[in-house]
Every structure is written in C-alpha cells, then in structure tokens.
Image (cartoon, protein in one colour):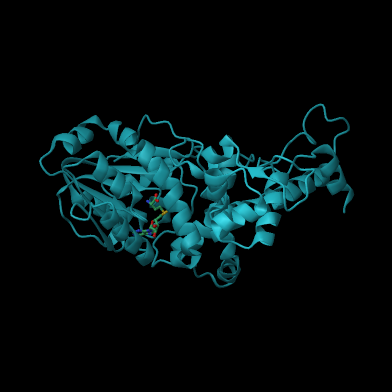
Length: 387
Ligand SMILES: C[S@@+](CC[C@H](N)C(=O)[O-])C[C@H]1O[C@@H](n2cnc3c(N)ncnc32)[C@H](O)[C@@H]1O
C-alpha cells in the first residue's frame, strides 16, 4: 500500500461511499499542503473505489438483491439468497461489501457472519429502487457498467478511427438509459411540455394531435406522452433495433399499441410530412450522426404552429476545464460511449455528449429554424430548447 493510500484510508475511514472525491485532503485548513501527486492519487483511489462499488450496485439491481431486501428485510444471507434464488455464499459477500460501503445496514455486525441480518435504509430505497423519487439514480450503475464493458472496442476505435455501434453497449446501456430517463419522463415530461403552452393546448384538446419522438430509445417518453394526452397518436423512431423492439413490447403491455407505434430508422432520413404538432428529441440530438439533417427532417414534419422540443445536456456556454462534476460526467460518457457510438453511424458530424447552447442554436439555424429558444425549465441534468 502506498503512503498516499495509507493517508486516504486514515483520513477518510468512510470514503467507501459513492460520493465524489472528498477535497478534505487538499482543501483549506488541511495543514501542510499535500503534493499535487498525492491529491491526484487520492482522487484515483476514490474513483477506483466508486467504480467497483458501482458495479456491485449494478449486481444488486439486476439480481434483485436490493428489491429482495426491501420486500423481505431484514434478512440474513441465507434468507436473501432464498428470496432471490441466488447462491448464499455470494450473497453473504455482497451483503458485507454493501454494509461496508454503507449502502445497506448491518443490524448485528458482531454476530456470526452467516447469521447477521441486513436491512435496506429508506434512502437506498429512494435512490436505487423508487422510480417516482427525484433522488432515483440507480440505473446510472447500468450505464457505467455498460460503458466499461465496451472499453476494449473503444481502445480499438481510438486506433483505427471507426466507431462502436450503440448496440455493442448492450442491455446495460439500453436499460440504464431507459430506466433513468424513463423515470424523469414519467415525473416531468408533461411539465417540460407545459413550458410551451400553445403546443400543450393542442395536445390536450386537439381532435387527434400527433407527436413524433426522434431517438425514442426504449419508448418511455412516447408512452409517457400517450398517457398524458389520451387523444394523441405518438410515433417513435430510433436507429437501434433492440430499443425499438422493447419499445413495441412496452406499448403492447401498456395497452397503448393502437396509439403508440415505433419504427427503426435514422431521424435524418425521414421524409416531409407536415402533420406533427410536436416533435421531441430527448437526450438524443448529440448522439445523432447528422444532427442538422435530423432537425431539418423534424422541421419538415411539423404541422402549422407545431414545435420541436429538444432536451439535451445542461452545460456551461463554453469549455472551462475546472472539474465541474456534471461536465466531468458528460465527458466520461462521451469518451466511452456517445462519441464512439455516433462515429459508428454514417455520420456527418460526431459531436460527443457535451453539447453547448450555441451549438444547438447554430444547428437549429442551419436546419432552417429561427434559432433554438431556451425554455424556462429547471432540471439537474438537461436544458430544454424550443425550435
Ligand atoms: C441517449 S439515448 C436516448 C434515448 C431516449 N430518448 C431516452 O431518453 O431514453 C440516444 C438514442 O438516440 C438514438 N439515435 C442515435 N442516432 C440516431 C439517429 N441518427 N436516428 C435515430 N435515432 C438515433 C440511439 O439509438 C439512442 O436510442
């Protein structure tokens, strides 16, 4: 163990949480200023810890361990293994690790390991399992694991300049995005649309309002809009075949397949139509290989008075490399996923995740709109534009 790690472990006995790296060791009042290399090593150690723990969160979600604890806890390892149909020894190790990471509570740590009982605290239920809670971010674990699983392909494309197709990131990224964004669509999509009262009025009161969702993924936004506007007909388009198949299944299961349809296609290739009252592009514009073409196609699909709603990353106006956590997160996604996936398309532009308002506005103008107006909507991750 290095001196730096010893310091980290001594200074931060509970640094095993998923919190961002602490700046206690480098901040004012920390005594002698540590060497910059020590501070960096501290950050790397904390990042490694977080990566490992995020993968164990992924396991806890996909294997039903958290849900089992919520539904049957407090549980000893054998009970949880029984309820989840998993191997007891692995479940015990996972429980001890989760307790060490303070994600799960061990009620009787001094008891025999096989007899210890564990419970899921309410905060973990909110953040990991409850889609209706604004703190729900559990699916980030699937996203991160999916991005990391493709890292060998990413290494290859850095050398050969090609791309990593979206489907190569598998169910982890597809479901991570679907669940994470799906929860915010269920909670807030209607409020975002309400920032365009004229459009909302048509969706609520029109005889048969039409909505087109470009880059619809697994269909959660299309379904949320169909539920909110019972007269509306919603069509989703996405390049990813597996996403569209899941979206179709979800529409059928929700009993909405008569009003909500999905097709595989490139948003930029859609022909003119002129019948849609709303076109949405929700966290997908920066992923599109021809974003101006997609916006132009969206414009040609609008009925009179219709509008395009773009939701994309909340960024600063310009590149300021100051360690801002949100932009760090976006760049992480970009390096490992968004840029390689966009470059796998027959792309005109491969922009990457960090899309700034000036870029969206310039693309909107190139596509024939007057510009991209920023809507007055608060969100911790996204900015909203009306075109
Ligand atoms: C970050 S995901 C967002 C998916 C969905 N809107 C959501 O918020 O859950 C971006 C989506 O854009 C899709 N996409 C990328 N390029 C596309 C293109 N040229 N045309 C249509 N969809 C595209 C991807 O397949 C992916 O499903």
